[in-house]
Image (tube, rainbow, N blue to C red; front, side, top):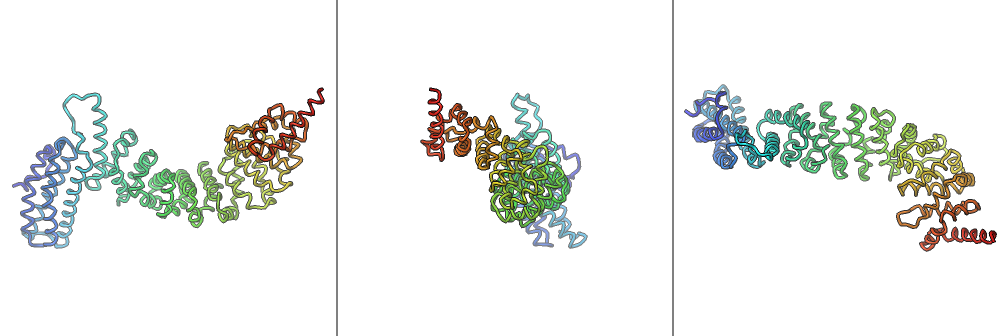
Length: 560
């Protein structure tokens, strides 16, 4: 009898063709017995309908040209045969009504129905994934130089297919193998990765086993960081399960999920989706309580989200301002503090109520303390620049804003210096403030900044100098600097790329009362530049040109 063939260890030696023959023999027997059963008619009717689909599925599988050469094919036929053998056993018990109890048998029949569903689904998937086209069994034929890579890709495809096929424990084993392969050969995994593989991984993120979820998110984190499949991940629904892991996963799961969101949130559309799926609150909680790596990744994710203007109010309602200020004060890693400063810069860039909120929570004091470090960051200076107009000058002076801006002009990156110069432009609303800024030593640093390669830096430095020079003390300081006139004359360049022209004209006009400065302007070619700027109707250019030309004419008469 077919059903007495036994499912012992020796049958592992059977070939795919032999397993196909075994399954084909088992199907009619299973169908005949299932139709004879009189008890549990509803359940057996469903089982019969599924058994009837098996012959066509086996036919589809066996008609593939690589049917006999693929390990997965053989495994699927083994699984189908095992299910059919179980169906025969259960039908025998039901025909003779020798089962232990109704509830127990109902449960067994439901499990059988589920196994048949899985067999049919997996055989269909095996054909759909295309993995049958990959010959993965050892070959005795001689190999060419091109074969090793093809074989490697075939193995990778088989491994990825195993994530979609079989019971959960089989997928768990495949996941273990994939984690190891990703460590050693991520490039080849990415080369063969398909959308269906991504979908299978995303489904495993919701598995009941915490270990499977943890391993799956480790793989997804590597995929997100690779930058090659973010769109697939998001479109296959990775965000909700990642957010759930951030909220209630294991420590490793939380860390990997947060790093994944960090990478994915670089897209504005995905950042909006994270907010829409309720991701802000768990990310903020990680900033409060997470370990150093998770905290930094969460801060960066929130920073990325805060760059999207329409979600900033939602972030504020979830308490982001206080959390970011706290991170600025107490962040475990320096990166966390930097992300917090960038987040505050984004939040305060265009929203008055958020600026007030940052000020009320003590944000200015925290930003200033952060700027006291040896390498002041552009983001913190940018946030400070956004806030200075919302606070009285008396408070800014008492908090020590001016010395910090001088420190940034001395020690910060060019971007930080540019933000500091912009902040100076914003606070110089009175003669008294301008005098204090000049006395703090800003003038020589701004003059030096006029030599920067970046046009934006030159422009804001020229703007700051032009504003500060309306104070007589500062005007004298600019005159004393040997580089001021040459640097400002260079900024008279009429090219469209030079956006500092009008500020250079304004500053040189204030210096033109000095004979020495006028002579320097003429010697560095200011007249030629000013003629072109006059034609371009740059404000003040014509007046300064006339003044320099009069001075040049007088000097000619004096020589004669």
